Length: 258
Image (cartoon, rainbow, N blue to C red; front, side):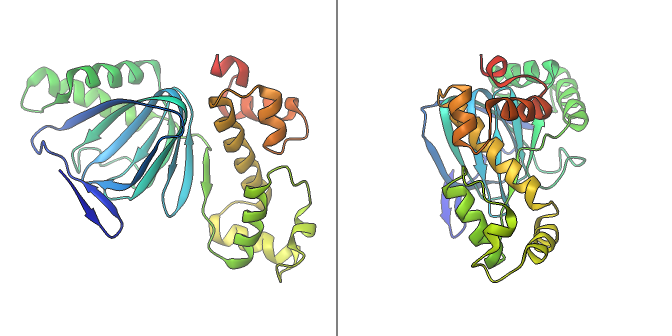
């Protein structure tokens, strides 16, 4: 059952007894799931396409064969780039106590991938069924062992940082240095560098790097060639983008999206 609240649609689970419930759905390019939240923890896996998850704290880009962990009661939207095959596990509250209480993009092992797909075919898992209880334990063990990947863009609130961020999000090809971007913001380069560290815990350069990588990934999912995706996202050369992509995901972009 879903009901409207001030901070989005409350998508309440209709099965309070099962430890894990599922959702399998394919979405067209450009589709947006509006602001909503759940009473369960959520593992959203992209077997095809790229998803962009937004909360008030940040933006996460989920490429194919990766997943995003969204704890219960966090309002979020999901935007699709390219055709998206979404496979979701909903975990009963307190089932995954060792997992973080914030959103994360995570690597999916070959075993965890098969567990997700198998569970989605089944529809739900219950602890009262012995063999299903064992399967739940394996899923939790795999989730606790996963590695997070740096595909998050923290949201900014300090007005001077927001102005700089808006410039780069509207035109990622803007190649001005931080000192040049600071003109007109009322703050010097050193002050802005300090504010970035204080507010989001990363440097301006790292934030800009994340923005470019996430924009390029969405363009690739929509069918853009590597060269176009790289240049439109602000990389000086396609090879610079390929190097950053390989560093983050361990494979070239052309091979990954093939």
